Length: 360
Image 1 (cartoon, rainbow, N blue to C red):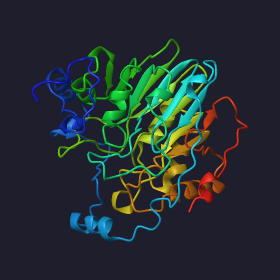
Image 2: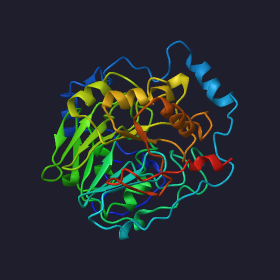
Image 3: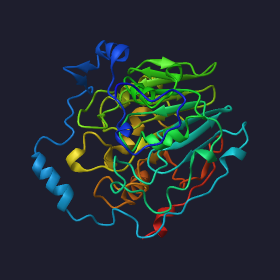
Image 4: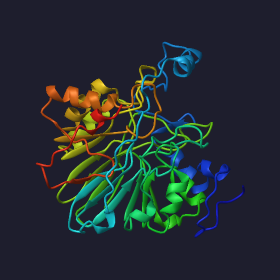
């Protein structure tokens, strides 16, 4: 296609448009000026092969396709709390997780929605990466207007075409890494609503607030060509809360750098799931979760990237079992809400069940 969809279109499609578009024009010129873009692609701070270098690509593929996947999907439906999000008072500071890496935040009346995926699958085709039964029960109609849509990177399990199209009339502003805005502009979003940030660039969404794009150790791409858009984590600072939003990414020195520069954090939302020793550099392994939290100087962590899609081979509930097991050796708090459960950010005494223990 020679140009993007017509601005204002609410078109839904399952075709090639869903892949988005690689950066071009002025957007590409800005990318070429980034110190994080070298040799034709964005780079991590440390050398980071997607797959471990001591095993062949064929060997890794064989492991994934033919290794025994023990309980990587639940046998029964995952319980979901059906919260009435629109009725939550505007003066209440809350967070709601929707499985995997999608969550809604309201602080001081300002609303944020991060990496929403409210489709039955997280892939270009409907028969791959299907959502677990019961986990996909929210839609755009359940939400108030969204002041800021935050996208950490453009992988299919974080940027879903049908979902963002459904939210188009509700979203006032979009914040993402360099290049990711090309997808939104191609999909018909108003370019004036899109802000793209390089690592350590920031905006002030409201008076007294700051949203900073910070490094992550990952990669990007929705098609064959990788790393043409930037993957990011975010620091969200309000007058009352300091939050870290990890996006996807493995352990590295950036956690300590972010903690020193912007910590301590009241809450760190850390990816904890879809890990594998074959790609241990680009996803946070269970034994590294509290090391990351300590480096960030986080008081509490919310483990995400689990309980909705089986993108790896580990048991579906292992991330939650591991985070609670490892918690015994740490003073950092862990919150484990059910999908859809309201987390009251001002309530330090709120308790959360180990809800996954009842599901085979």
